[in-house]
Image (tube, rainbow, N blue to C red; front, side, top):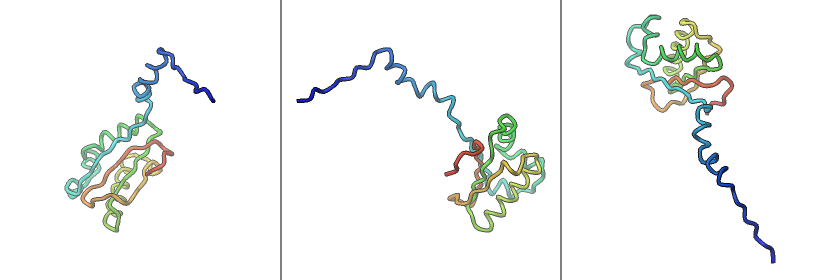
Length: 126
């Protein structure tokens, strides 16, 4: 008959395992999300107006602070969605963001908005 082995974890080690998510959390990269609605985009555009769209000012600052970030532009797809995404990409490049840091991704579930997300350069996109 085989004897079962029982493992005992020292009491001092257990709290370290229990708090793992708390001390590891600051190292997890969190993607920021910004939304531009069709209503916001329908207004006449200029560099100043585009840079003042809600969220875009924060996006520019975030990119300046972290050179490893890039922008993912999610749009609904189709010709209209692609045209909107490409125009927004063009404005972002005109405002000084490198085109190499901007990626387009069709498949957003609604055509009345575009979603911009920050991502670490080289991260796989779902």
